[in-house]
Length: 156
Ligand SMILES: Cc1cc2nc3c(=O)[nH]c(=O)nc-3n(C[C@H](O)[C@H](O)[C@H](O)COP(=O)(O)O)c2cc1C
Image 1 (tube, rainbow, N blue to C red):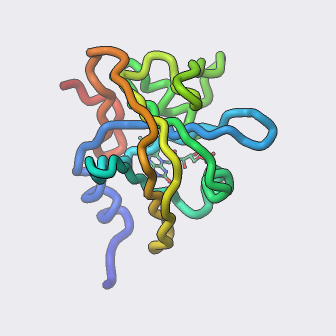
Image 2: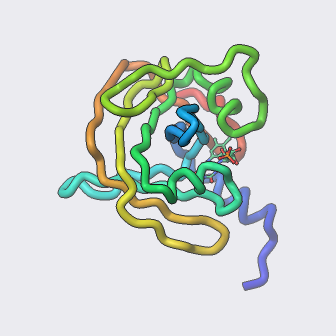
């Protein structure tokens, strides 16, 4: 199909989503985080989620080692954290992670999952990461951060 990349981006971005940060521990012990809006609740029984990652993104090399990951669902006041983990604008003070079960979750998140990779599918310029849910919880009743056509400041 012949297509206009900018139009594809704009149409894809017309579907509003929430914003998550996927976090994973590196061999060094440091935490790597990546902002992801491709997150989707996949299955209730068994409990599963998925998200997709651009093949060139650094996080893919840690995910392919099959580690446990944290998924932080961001609140509406976490635009700075979203930009930080998208490498768009780094925060002066690095965002704070808290321990939840065996994973690291961003402070201020409204809810979280701990997940383990079950399958990885190679599709186009992304990989689809299918994960089983190990644990989950709700942290607050704050409103979620929304992403729409490149903006993360849409108010509910
Ligand atoms: C709101 C928002 C949502 C994003 N969603 C995704 C996503 O679902 N998958 C992805 O691969 N990149 C996504 N990105 C881009 C990555 O966060 C960005 O490329 C990041 O720098 C990759 O990190 P890494 O290379 O350090 O792992 C998103 C960026 C923003 C601002």
